[in-house]
Length: 473
Image 1 (cartoon, rainbow, N blue to C red):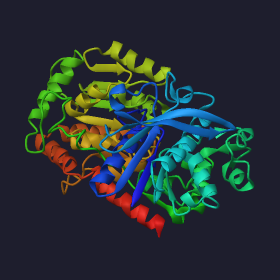
Image 2: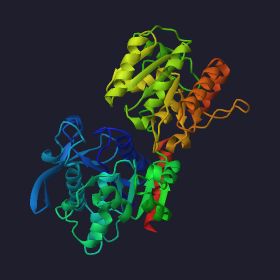
Image 3: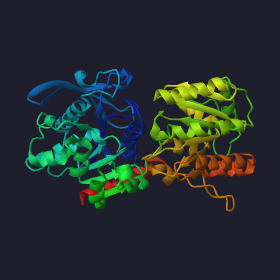
């Protein structure tokens, strides 16, 4: 079985969030379980030259919108899997990956170029795995081409929904420019008087997947369907939720090259050294018996920052430390900075994103906070489990799938989670965690429960193989 994964971002070549982690790790995991897979992603201005191993196609001439666009494709295996990066400077050499008025045009071109590239490099794939709204254009083009192009007749499509909140909406007047001027394609895109690339992907792909079992249910409801819940319900018989995996070659405290002291479930004492180093890095007092609450996230309303603002004072009153890594909305950035100014001996703040520091925080922190309003999957709670850092999460999406409430009676559970989006419910779980932290044996038990979880990508990849086989049947 030959799989082509197409994504707007993929580590290590590009990343703005979880999509990049998933798209970069899945092809490698598929190859580990014996599947022939290839990844296609854009070559951005931000993509490091060291990842561009060679030029695979020098003259990738893309006939699009009545013009021939000259592009090229680089080849790499920096992510552990064959990867082709489409280099078209006028579309992808920008100051940031997203955020432009013509983003829909940029990714419509990328989708078409990816399909042209597939025809250049070999036989048609059995499955084209498309990711999020950026790839809805390819779902429409493949569905259309299967009716007249023999190359695509046996190819089937899987469309993965990473976040329903982003739907790639644009004006219907652009549909004809992209070649989607037939009634079949137009109907797939049309949504409330506009065009939506997400809707096209949902409508025309052979099967649908989401990044957790719980999220597959949530997007069928108005609160999380963002106007397309009716379509997801309509196609529920072709929808499956597969929780994302973790690349344990990258996120493993036993081998992590970003942390100063290595440890595992049999040697948790070494985690205290990571805690010491983390406190020193943020110029905080080295008081190792006080818990560190950490958060690594984009500072947006989705991530539950409002709840953290409401409970931060109570956390500080307990004598605990708080460390925050991330950037986003100014009001949230301002809050964390003001909290740091108010309690410089308890609060550490880093604005922006720093991959190395993220590893150090996961290793050195005691408790990880993820009180998200919605969270399709989430990765940091799974990183935290592997690093013996106990997560406190809201029971939504993949957070609900991967975190089980600690039960003090039978000793089961790997963290703490709450339901209603309310600060008092969040605070209840924080107090429970502090109570458990005060008993070293209880705390160690929770840590070991989490570290024993298998959230590996190999495990997830086998479920994707089952999905691909179902799609072909």
